[in-house]
Length: 332
Image (tube, rainbow, N blue to C red):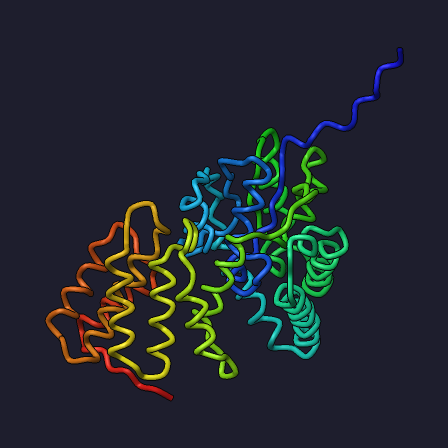
């Protein structure tokens, strides 16, 4: 009896494109979506080959979802940023140089348009989309040449690929690095989306992200109602939904309402929640207490932020500013 021909073996190295802070922008490709995709892949650990931003949304979401981050400790390339800035200053002195800069700027704008248009997992992981992303990098290289103009991108990618060679599991890498890494790492592949659809974690994360980024045209009552009816989950706990509701009250100048929601959020803080949450809640609570004239309690709240083992930079800055000078709410 003939034996069935085995299919191709699953790739041992999966490259997951990272959008960084732009994950907060996309309702169908946000930090919650990433945790759901990793759950479908069966990944309990992710290698971090993306940026060094300590406040990256996945730095909160992955541990909260029980997914360990394995640091790959990328080398320091800040010197390349300095060389890039020097080159731009030089080129800007000459008409031909300014034309090259305009060409490169056009490519950067094209990339920005790609990553801010509506995205979902199928779009982000499609070969056509990744080819469009890579085309913008090729255009920058054509305009400014490889080297300082591209922040030595080819050299950096060669080094990164060498470090990833032999790795297994899921690796988080910057979106615009992924197409070139796939070429350099023939055994690597993109995540298999078969049967995947963004679920409740994605929906809840999208709601919170939306509430933190209010727009003039928003129906604030509808947003508040949506926030109030949710129970929360590990990635987007109830405490964050309460804090997001407080931000809506604050946006319309309702300080007592904001204080009530923030104190409720503060009481709901617990171990195992996203690591940035306590700092964000307490910093805002300190500001609201300040604006209501409760200076002593506000100062204690600011000090609590600074005593945390981790607080986002924006929360630490708010606490430090609040200790120097009382916070006052100015509505525009």
